[in-house]
Length: 241
Image 1 (tube, rainbow, N blue to C red):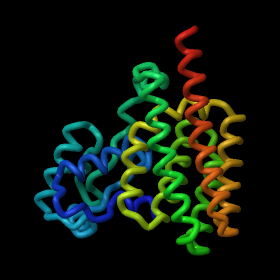
Image 2 (image 1 turned 180 degrees about the horizontal axis):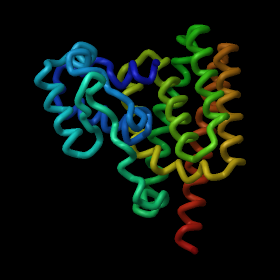
Image 3 (image 1 turned 90 degrees about the vertical axis):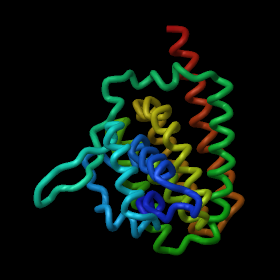
Image 4 (image 1 turned 60 degrees about the horizontal axis):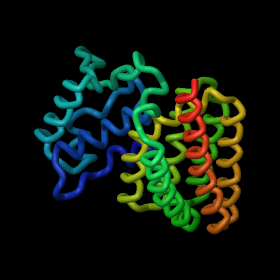
């Protein structure tokens, strides 16, 4: 899966366990790594991420201490993603605790990264890549709960970023998603909003198939901006109720 290829891609030369912790934590918090999903074993993680076994073990121990992963013993044992750490919190907490200015700035950052990723992906995606994205969009359309819709959305976003074939852009998208996922999940309580997002992805898919970079960039910008507009509306509605 291309999203997992980004999550477990090699760490930069100057990075150590803290970068591994951040990347895996981002993937867990955003839902890209699902609850109870088994992580690769330490040897495979060390090979995939280009670090030593000791570095991987340190990172996993920290993630375990933070309650983001747990260890199961036995024949089918290993490290697994913990259940959501935010289940006992209101879905609106994250939105209530940030300012409108911060929200707008986050949107501008996300828009800049995602629109540029879309431009690059338009010329670099293969037919197989486009088909893979189409399957993720189908999953998003079929998802019934806000949590599953958000998780599918994050996979669509990261898939497009990964297809830019820029490791920095893909990792920036993953970093953004650690904040983004918690904020946008409440929006997916609306079936109308869900349908609107799916339609935007369908339009993006058509632009990729037709190699229309300008159209893809326009749709990508509109997609992120509609999230921000709805988030600001929701934030104001929370404060007035």
